[in-house]
Length: 122
Image 1: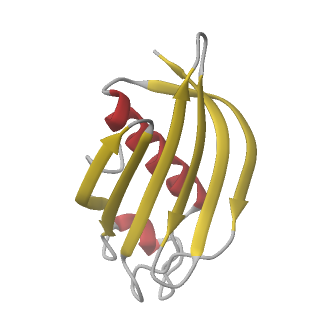
Image 2: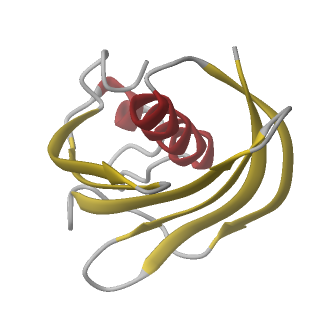
Image 3: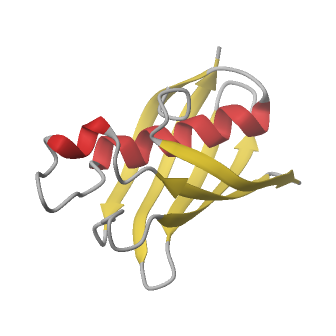
């Protein structure tokens, strides 16, 4: 959804043995930043969660639904006008009925977001 709407582009992607890693470039001129926030763009927390979901789906080559989010930690803002490059790491374990996920978004100076959750493969 965010990828398709030009919110970010994928610079690199690798997926092996339950770990998907990517580097993305966030589009600092995207329409979202007109309202969040004018003159001081900040990536919304819900967008960070969606990016994790999209990379999980890319790694699994299938659609998912978030079923439980135990830990969501928004640790540092992402201001794409200052630094639009982000690193994504999604560790996943496929169980009988769900997928355990531990994920993070980082950049060159900080860890921006951490998440522990369960998803269901649709």
